[in-house]
Length: 304
Image 1: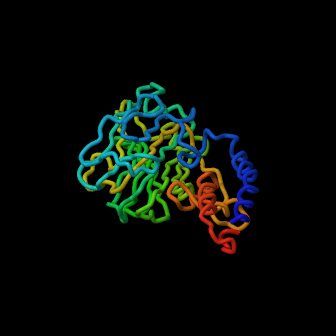
Image 2: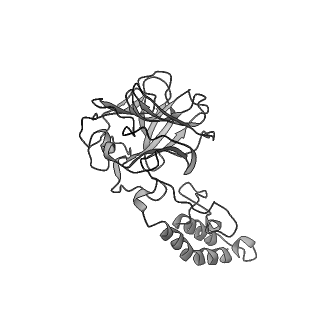
Image 3: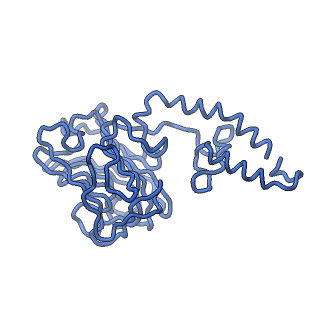
């Protein structure tokens, strides 16, 4: 135990070095891994802590929570919203259409990129075919949902009467645990990508001209969370927390893989839920200190 504590302390400068290596542009980091604060690229942010309020102060409050969808104390961070997976359960926000106003469609129309992301906790697998997670569209726009089998992530950029982009993941989403999901659209490269738990799942390059995000002129768009827009039988069964929309193509900085020999992750022994969480922080120090205080036998290897 003393050896582990010594190693943990010796690793603190390394942890700081790893963090500083990715500090050059923290305003483009994906959400939820490096803090829960808003940044200049955040257009809308919902903590969903018993409130429909947009926590950026930009006024994009959800206007409805309906038909079985309800706040829960079992969110990823504090509270969240629980979706029962049947009926017209949803969170809903009407979004200004594309009328030439740069603030329309969450201000994405003049942005160099866009990211929609959230934490999800599926209660079952498979989900219903095309079970909706975030639908920022009407007949066009950005969509993040499950695939036809209800097991993997899918993203759509729909353009009315034109077609669009479909990107599907390759990893089955495990039920009974939290996952970070994201759709990233990059104007510079023309790519549309989906991420699961910080790892790139799939991407496709398609510039689609000026209509990068699928939003059509004069259309009133609706952000719905928890179902496929206006379609019964495609509801998500589980919890959703910490939804964010950004005016930038976000990315996940690479970090050492948990448990890799010789990395700082060897000191990752705990987390918010009492299990390793891929980060070396005060949760690990507190768990180490608690275990040390409980040591009663000096010859116990765990106390060394």
